[in-house]
Length: 633
Image (tube, rainbow, N blue to C red; front, side):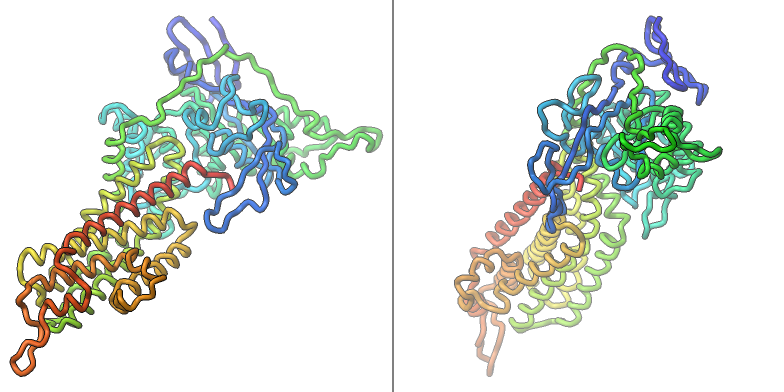
């Protein structure tokens, strides 16, 4: 039998497994040897990190990173030879003033950015050098901002995460989510929507617990959190830390978090503290050791003073000068008293290498499509408002162009209809930009593939765009008295459907590229305006300058507009204008004036489908690039 004291918990190895007793919660659980082997010690040895300046690109909002060995004189150091160790069953709290490098260190330990390249490794898992991919596979990373879907309920949010991250049966996933909701203290709000600043939902503390649940539903052995108590009141903050303490003690997790000015009761729950200042480690050890180091440095701490806050406030004055003496006593820094406590390890632990993705691509597409469906249906901006808008526009245009006869009127009707419908697709841009942050967080953690996300997004919007096309086409087609054949009507609906979907695909690729909503709106407005200008409505193809001819063929308006005209004038013997009882304008004359041919009726749709496929593929490439090149700054 082997026993090891680890703060408030003890480990007792027996014949079958491991018994864990936690004095804080007065609970005990038995884990099999497999679970015990999936505990991890994360260690940083002489970890340094720097970035090149200027580090931000105006278009991509991405930083350029470099290692500490970079010879560039413009590099700015973020971390300087940091040493720290996070152990299973414990919480390591990283503290320090703003700009100390806390978030940078967390992202490096979580594998959210690549460790600096150097001759010797800097980050280790169970004393084995680790790269960013290995760190991501064993850890769950909770960002400071809660990136959640506001229209999903608490239970739905956790359930979708379970479906994407677990490969077990559906009943087991539901049981896992139910137990997690109970552990997180969310049973009373399990059916409530997440909400945001515009949608009423759960409280900030409950939202933070949901964020934690999303990243622990697959039971990662390492949990890393960036300021989990930020923006919360003292009671909610204490509740969060108690939950994390329970996760560490009862499940053998290695918990690493950053925190800013915690209270007394929260400090007592931390097993070790890493104090950073200007990227350097000032102290790494217990709170009691920090207290002793401050006293040894010649400073006096008044009763009822928060030791960590005092150390952070005094960091600026705790500078050691070997030649300076004060009242006959040398003042040394906390850094010089820095010691790493060498606790007895439980022996070499096997590094468990989980699969990169828990489920198949098809399963991911189904789960993501279901989540997309719920978000679109519950979003008034994407579904209800667009439905009312499409039906209302169809009625208004139908009444304006009621029983129109002339070719000019019908051309104007088609051109305005396409302009209105395709421009309204930009309303989905803020939703796409918001979802992009969630996508980057989930795919970087290995929840699913980027290709599955793009495929699900493309599939879900197909039926919704069809509904919009039908709501618009039914009133406008019959009120305007367009081609009376049934085949012409269904072809009209098909063209409108593909035109709307093409605009939606264009918005999808631009939302993957632009840094924010304002830039996206500017680009979409400019592109759609250029497409409309070169569509052939204002200026015929023969009158266009040759150096602008490429824009005519790239125009997303050209192909549906020509398809609608060909469909309308498919009756070769129809006369469109009479003078003194004599036909002066027939279908052949109109099609000749517009440069249209009956043979292009279906080829235009093929080209439109090609543009849609191209836009979706470019969207995949842009999102894949963003997710694989995500950096700190």
